[in-house]
Every structure is written in C-alpha cells, then in structure tokens.
Amino acid sequence: MNDKTTWLIFSVNTAKYALPSALVQEIVTDEKIFPLPFVPDFVAGLINRHGEPYTVIDPAIIFDEQAQNTSLYLILNDTDQNCLRITDIYEFVTIPQKEMASFNGLVNNTLFMGSLKINGVEVTVLDSNAIIEKTRIDIENS
Image (cartoon, rainbow, N blue to C red; front, side, top):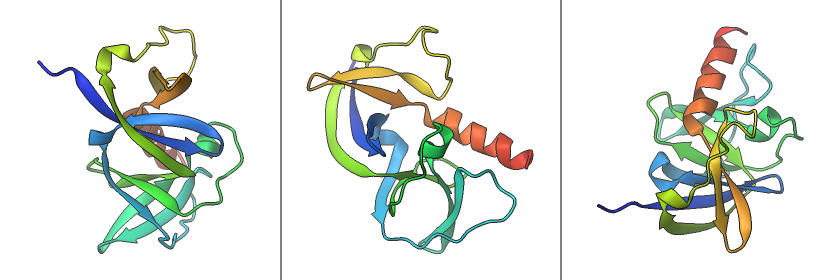
C-alpha cells in the first residue's frame, strides 16, 4: 500500500499552505475576473476557463487578511467548478500522509486539516472541501 501523497505548496499572501496535488486540476494565471453582485466578499467573481465559469475564492479574506492582488489560481478538482486565488507556487513534495500532524481540536477552525513539516517549516494543510462548503452556504445566505 502506497501511503505517500504529493502535496502542492503555495502561499496566500505571506503564509504557506498545502493541498494534496490530486485536488488541483490546473494552475492558471492572468485570467480576467468577472465580478458578481450579492456574493460574500471572499468571492472575487468568476473566471472563464475553456468556456466554463469557475468561482474565484480568495482564502486571504476568509482568514481575515488583506485581499490578494494576484492573478494566480488553483483550479480545483470539484464538481462545483471553484478555484482558489493564491499568491505564489513553491513546490510539489511527496511525503507520507501519516506525517501530516492533526490539530486535534487545538485550532478552532474547520478550514484546516492539519500541518506538515517541510524543509523545517510548518505548512498548514487546507481543507478545500470545507472552503467550498463555506462558500456554498455563504452564497445561499447572501
């Protein structure tokens, strides 16, 4: 059984985050955002990718930080066609899934799965499903 996972390491503003690379369909840049009315402030709008609309989510705003001034996006492998606005891409690393440290209730935020130690740096693992669910609920309640 192969318990290794390839992780994409990226940043949102200055903080580093990780996602399993299998959750990322594509990395794109320089796409025009089409704003949407009556959506939460962390939903920047839509980008058009190959004729399909993708909802742009800015995690920085969800994390109570300043909005990112970037046009770099992670297109997610999800049926709702979402993407995360990010600041930079650092690397792909393959490490055992079991090396992800669980927060075990120490952090009161359901948007994170745990953390990884990569090159001596603690990197927070995002829960993309939780971010997508938060987006869906907040749009429905807008």
